[in-house]
Amino acid sequence: MKRLIRKFKLFLYRKLGDEGISMMGIAGMVIVILLIMFIALIVISLPLMWLWNLLMPVIFKLTEITLWQSMGLFLLSFILFGVRLRLPRKK
Figure 1 (cartoon, rainbow, N blue to C red):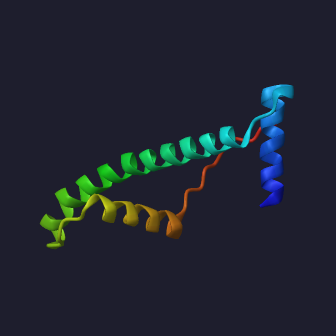
Figure 2 (figure 1 turned 45 degrees about the vertical axis):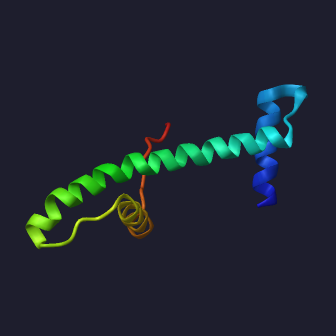
């Protein structure tokens, strides 16, 4: 963890130059990143919830789910199956 923080500070130092960055600036960036991740989770979970509520009760006689349940379902599927991005390699 310390190594990751050191790399992050080095990255910020390279981007900002000699001015550096205060701890409040880092805390602000962390809050913004967490907020963006939460919004992305909601954006991904809403279509999952709508599709579930549209299809599953009709096909399999299951109950409808809430937004929080769809977030949990998305996170569970992400943990179980993951996302494997295949980026093209440079030759």
